[in-house]
Image 1: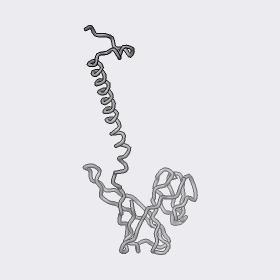
Image 2: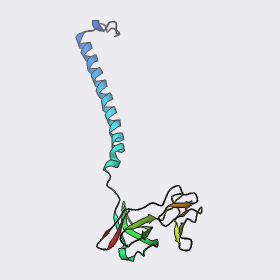
Image 3: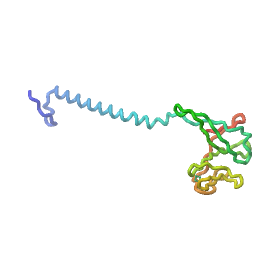
Image 4: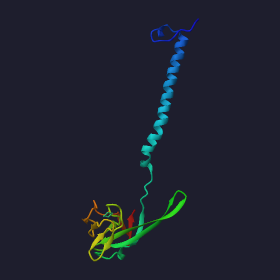
Length: 169
Ligand code: FES
């Protein structure tokens, strides 16, 4: 028997074997499309959800003995801790200012200016945190009092355990 061109109009006239082959190919095509869709979706979903399962990089770092922080005077402390970056070991370092009014409660301020990240320093005479880059100034609580900084200095969570002051970085 000679092969006939398959069109929708004559599909009903196709022989059962021809129809079964076409149905099989249609299912196979659908399955391949589904497999390709899943193969493309899995990495995208994984990429989107990965941050949820990433362990937190925050840690408590010993800053000093709580009694070392003078009352009513922002005091600079340099923290450091060892860390691994892949196979590379390095030491993270940074600076914070600790302030206490009563020797029991503390405010721990970042020294990074909120305008462009320059390091601020406490100016004892003018009683402000002075930013050297664009003359931004903050009061002793870290609130903006002059210049372009858009927000107060960042405050770090902290705790005192057995007389030692820890900061969460
Ligand atoms: S970076 Fe501090 S005022 Fe601009």
